[in-house]
Image 1 (cartoon, rainbow, N blue to C red):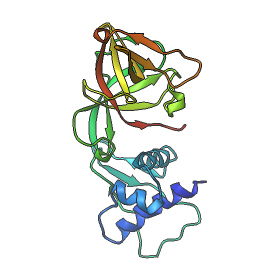
Image 2 (image 1 turned 90 degrees about the vertical axis):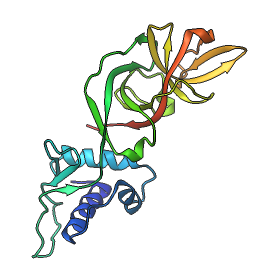
Image 3 (image 1 turned 30 degrees about the horizontal axis):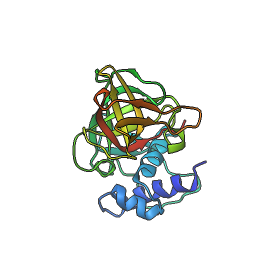
Length: 216
């Protein structure tokens, strides 16, 4: 059985296409379902794909196919399931592997595929994705196994969650703080300690732009 929001989204996509209109954008979906974040729409679509209601079309990252409708839903006799539902332009960004949300790990250098996301999740600039390894940022809502979307930049303000390269060899995801001429990488988990470095030891490689979580 679908959740209320999953059912609403599936019927919204189906009904709009049945009416001969273009499919709703992520913004329209979010507003129609009363959600605050477009990432919630991404999670709902992922859940519908996993449960067999939608299918991502091979070699067509921007389209979905409606495979079946909810139990008990009776469309008008003249209706038919659309063959393809174009929901929104998706942007592909590189996936650079895993980043430690704990103690720093060896610097990430290799590309490990890509992630398709709606442009509304990232805004302007160059971005890349990293898989989170560890639990030091859980109080900021960043869990082990999440995918974080990072905007490339070497500048960040105190309080930003950043990708920090330490001593040119190790990389970690932490909240940035500066005090008494030192750079402090602050975890968001009371079980972890702050890490303090001289400014020349830390290079900012990006800051958090968005997050993707997959529920299984």
